[in-house]
Amino acid sequence: MSRHSDSSRQRSHQARSTDQEPEDLVEQVKSIVTLLYEVVSSRPHEWEAYVPSARSAMTALNQIRFFSDPQRYAEQVWILHGIQDFAYHDADSGCIRDMAEWCQTAWLRILRNHPENVETLTGLGRNWLQRSQATLARIHREEDNDSSSQGSGHLSDNDTDQNSDDHDIASPPSDPRRQGPLYVEARGCLQPAVDFYERAVRSADALGSTTGDLLALAAESQMSLGNVTGPPGDERHFSHAIRYLRRAEETPGYTLSIYLQQYLNDYGRYVS
Image 1 (cartoon, one colour):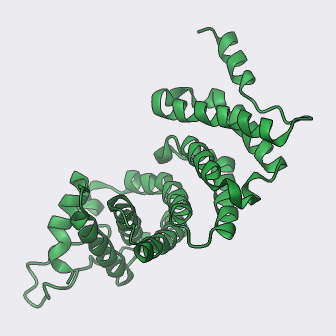
Image 2 (image 1 turned 180 degrees about the horizontal axis):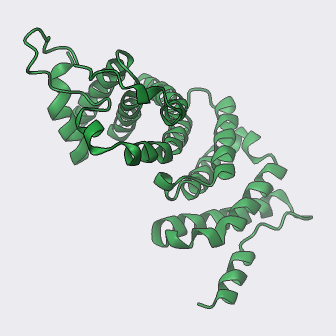
């Protein structure tokens, strides 16, 4: 396809907000979001061409105060997931920041109408967890092999310490880098992620609808926060992660990823 035809297609999917009925705008936005889902899943390398369309959809939704209507919950969630996935199409490299922040604001508006709603809380937790990924990737790149081998907040086997309690998690020596700006930035994103996932799990538990996926995401947020938190606070996050993983493992029909299963196998014995 030529560059000219690509540009024409992209322009054809921009929401035209002038003198249109709200329902017409919503249908145009849905067409754009369907396209964003397709771009993320099939051709993420083309993401830049669709940024104007995504922003026009956001503008149109703001104009009609779409996320203030409690009757359109299912549509709101579907649209938000599509735009949020597009905003974080390559989370390790960063995000389209204005879109990510717009999604966060929209989730919070929905939460006002649906307090303690599991999917809304999960959407907020996912937004913050994805936002942390670029900073975490920078931390990993900047850590040299020596510092990584000494441990950067992972649960560790302290078999050489005869006084250790098998029910405790052994913490590595305090790492001064954890007071550095990257670690502070990571914690600033991960603490809200942990908080929203905790609320989502509590709400799901109250409804009897807790899924393995939700528990695994809650565990991942705790593990990530533990990895950028100094002792003794890191132990609390790792312990929470293990408990979530145990529950996920016991969820009928759910299978932990290889990485999470190995984590549970290696460190679960330290948590009672």
